[in-house]
Each structure stands twice: as C-alpha cells, then as structure tokens.
Length: 350
Ligand code: PEP
Ligand code: MN
Image (cartoon, rainbow, N blue to C red; front, side, top):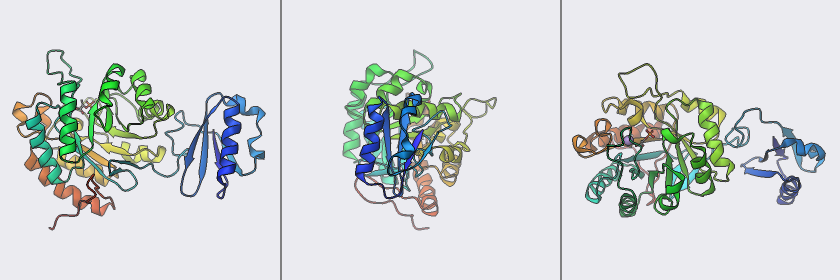
C-alpha cells in the first residue's frame, strides 16, 4: 500500500511514519516528489492492521496498490523518474543516446567507433565484454580485458559506459568498470542477477525479454527496485513473433504503455529490435516521437568484420545522418541530449 502525506508534511512527520512502519518489521520506501511525499509499504501488510495510519497527524490517504509491481508503479511515484549519470540526464526531459559496437573487440577499434559516435552526439558508450551468444562456438567477449578497454575509452571521450553483466558471479568485476549495468533480454528473468544488481547502487539498463509481457518487464524491474536500487531504465529491444522478415518485432506501443503504468524511464533499441540497418533510423525516429527517453544503437566501422551482430550495425556515416534527425526530433519533443562534459547537443542547422 502507499501512504500519501499531506502537502505540507515536514521531516518530523515523515520520520514518525517511517519509524512506526519499521517498528512493525516492514520496510518503508520513501518517494519524495515536488508536490507530494509518498511512503510505500511492501511486505506482509496484515501487520499494519494494528496501526491506524489514518490517525497519524500528517497522513492524508492510505491507498492499496492493486498492481503486482509496487515500487515500479506510477502510483508510488507519480512524477517520472529521472537520473543523472556522470552528467548525462535520462528521463525528466533528458534523452539518452547510447551507441557503440555490440562487442568490445580491441582498443583501437573502440577508440575509432567511440570518437565517431561521440562527435555525432551520442552521450553514452556501449560495448559488451560478456556476450550472450546463441552458439557456444561464437565469440564470447573479451571479459575483463574488454571491460578495461571500455572504461579507458569512456574516460578518453568523457562518456559514461554501459556493459552487460550475465551472471551474479561477474558482478563484482563488472561493477568496477561500468557506469550502467545492462541486463540482457535473455536474463530479464534471472532473478538472482536482478537481486544482485539491485544491491548495487549502479544504474541498471533492463532489456525486455524476447517473450516478456509489459507486466513481466515491470515485475523484473521491481526485483531491482525492491533491493534499494532506484535507478532502473527499461529498454524495449523487440519481441519474438511470427514475423520473420525482421530479427524481432519492435513493440513501440510499450513506450506510452509503460509510461502510463510506471515512472521509470524507457528507451528503445531498434538495432536488436529490427536487426536491419535500413530500418533502424526510421524506428529510432519513431521511438523518440513516441516519447522514449532514449535510443540504443549498435555502430561498427566495419560491420562485415564485426565479431558480433555485424549485420545490424550502422556504419558511422549512417549514425551521423541519424543524429541530425534525432537532434531535430529531440528539440521538437522538448528533450535535451546532455553530456558528461556539460554541453547540450543543439539542433544542427538545416
Ligand atoms: C546487446 O545489447 O548486444 C544484446 C545482446 O542485447 P539483447 O539482450 O537485447 O539481445
Ligand atoms: Mn548486440
């Protein structure tokens, strides 16, 4: 349930309510918005039967959350969540442009790609060091060596970095290098991994499982949030359907759908969503127009030589052209592309 406090409830009132809930052995979750303070109580709510919450000075309303996800729900946090990761704003009008190769292959190559995507206006660098490949014989990623390269290149170009963690046993290593932990589609319901990432305070990019419903995705986000990590970014990357002319079916309706039900930022990955470079720009534009808080694009300077996901990579020149459109659209949607160095991408002259 959620406890909505009166508009002018001061710190004393808030602390009093928090203490009374904790004394019952329940964990209160505080959501302090601009106009309202809300306290979520998750767990065995029957324990609250002995506590007449309505009678506490400063409490305005006690409302049950009917949805199975609580901390991820809009009811708990009526304003959209916004995070700042090394100066890059995601949500609250901040647009994330995450770009880079599918896998980290070498330092030289990553420097080349990062230089190009940064110059074009991307504000977060991506690259996988642990790759969830369908075949055990395909390139599995460079592991820690790759993470070191990613961190160094991110620092060189002043971009926060995102990389996938596939297993709870990798977390201790990955968290030393990553600014954002990516949980891939295949691991969206790896509950131990979700809980472990929830115990860190590193933002999590949670990709939708290929057969996950919107509710499944939000329940997975709830696992991370319930461990105390409030920085979860949802990511649509396409789902499996009967359609086989695209790698997946990109479900753009999830953007407004999630925004109605949840306060979490949501971004869109048209690279995995379509698997076809010629479709990616249109889907990236559509994602921004649908209100997404960001896009996630794979870029490689020589797709035919890429060790992973080459067929869906944009080359830097294509990414340059896409970014001209993205900047203009961001402007139109009232979004800003902020960066670690503080400059804001402006609409390129037409
Ligand atoms: C990736 O980002 O390279 C990746 C493997 O994504 P997904 O988990 O969406 O397939
Ligand atoms: Mn990939």
